[in-house]
Image 1 (cartoon, rainbow, N blue to C red):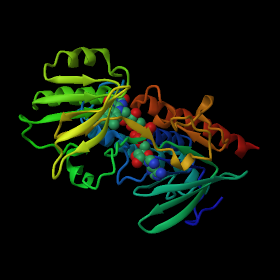
Image 2 (image 1 turned 45 degrees about the horizontal axis):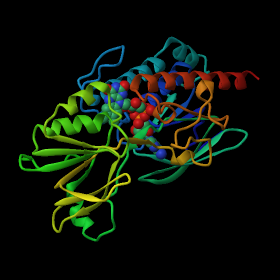
Image 3 (image 1 turned 30 degrees about the vertical axis):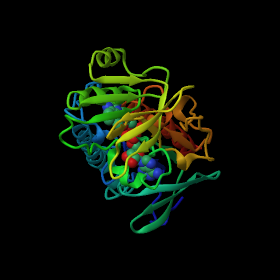
Image 4 (image 1 turned 45 degrees about the vertical axis):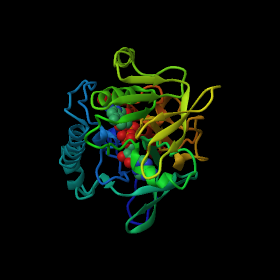
Length: 345
Ligand SMILES: Cc1cc2nc3c(=O)[nH]c(=O)nc-3n(C[C@H](O)[C@H](O)[C@H](O)COP(=O)(O)OP(=O)(O)OC[C@H]3O[C@@H](n4cnc5c(N)ncnc54)[C@H](O)[C@@H]3O)c2cc1C
């Protein structure tokens, strides 16, 4: 199969986070040609967004996600150099079997995969980058597109909302420096919402934690912590249904399940409602769960035999770096076996 750049790819990987990079290293080890595509300027996926130390990887710890992302990129680069300079590559090149100028791994950053199609021979993907639209082909596709932050739009359609946007923080921390007189709302019930509420309670007048579930979903130790914070109020089974204010946010309108709407004096809202999978490109192509995660069988093959998936998009229960890496390598191994079998037949 040939794409318009004239190269043959055995595999295309979409997503350059821990799962995609781990898989790319598996394909380097197997000496299969691989195109790795990511829409961000650098590989690393969600890692650069992790502000805290990473302490759950058996190989090492990192002071933050940026350090982990750098290590990931370095590992891939070292593997690429070692593959290129290996004895078998040199011998293959001397015997005319392989050009040692040929790169087994091609990385495209700032390139988005926008469409996927399969046929009996393999997979075709459509991409968009600053130079325009392109199409690439491969025998197999591995999708490792991870999670993105889930946003919560400002409720209500009042034209005032645009003026209030700077007080509605969708995972961005653009809060005023001095919060001593400020009443805040944090929306969410998971670990990061609770941690944020506890941290802000030390700086703000009052923090209201607004959670639509029956109870908070956070770790038990965090629950015990927040229950002891004096200026933190927890509102379960409650949702924000409107915002009030002229040039600035002054109140939020809340609705408790089966209760009357009520208002609270709030001037900043911080949204921490979790993450959602980047699986739009697979919609209608492979089977997805009701929460838009990819359904995979043993070996991480999807409902479409030429498409595999790895990392957070398959792992709603426990999305973690180590599991994404393990899944990336497992999927790579399964795809290698398929390709070797096709080559032998
Ligand atoms: C704040 C925070 C803290 C965390 N802390 C930890 C921790 O301490 N320990 C831990 O184990 N885990 C932690 N995690 C989770 C961990 O980061 C993820 O489990 C891991 O990054 C998942 O890897 P992945 O390869 O599946 O996906 P991702 O890392 O999300 O990578 C997916 C990549 O695919 C790209 N992509 C998506 N769609 C397309 C497309 N259409 N075209 C091209 N590219 C695309 C994305 O841009 C991204 O670069 C944390 C996550 C966050 C957000």
